[in-house]
Image 1 (cartoon, rainbow, N blue to C red):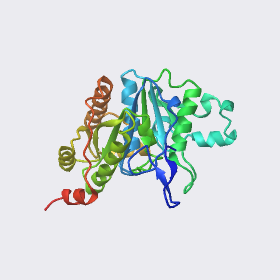
Image 2 (image 1 turned 180 degrees about the horizontal axis):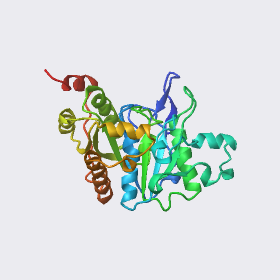
Image 3 (image 1 turned 60 degrees about the horizontal axis):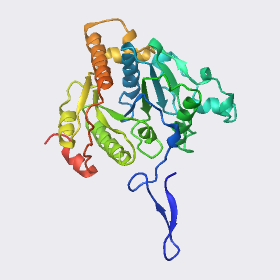
Image 4 (image 1 turned 135 degrees about the vertical axis):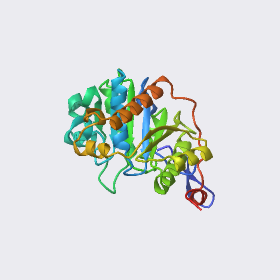
Length: 304
């Protein structure tokens, strides 16, 4: 932890916080950084389609010839199942089996190859109500470094649990170059996005992460998303409509790139390829973002 205890006159002990303003956050060991790969952390309201977006974006990068590693950061360990066709054991699962003696693990115990060569890792998480997600992310990256799995990786995508912005689940931001937010064109998704932007802004004070853009998902229109982006200095970088083929791809445990072709699906795949190419060519000018106060965005969203 970066927070330290400090005594004040009168015997009162307070926290001296140095990582993130107004909060105690998990700090990762700087010696276990990821390295030269482009690193993206995908956030958004729970159930908005982050895993679908992450997995298909991973495939799109792989179609461009990039070596891709996707890391699921949800205790449900369901980030990568459309790539691997099954639920894979988590890093925490396999560490428990060897009593956390990492030297006893083999690469194939926790890294699994998915569709089109995308490498998949499910970090997992502590049991419900215990522990910290930041520890899990830290152990996962440390293990990947120990096994030299990041040295030849071009792209790393963290698929992060819901809209939880505590220090633990914000820890992928300590590794990422850019944060991407998945949102729908509705009140709840944009309200959650605003709070995530605030978390990214807090991490950006101490780490290199910056906002990379907004991905509109499951939405016919993007008017409310675009209005929010204009008001906060952000940018929408992709739009994926609400199509039944996307729902069916999850049921078939497949990425969109494996589904039977149709004109509408072709358009979606091309949008993923365009997004991947743009993110690879340049992460673009960093967007600082100006998150609103909760009451302000409550008034901002919606119709008169």
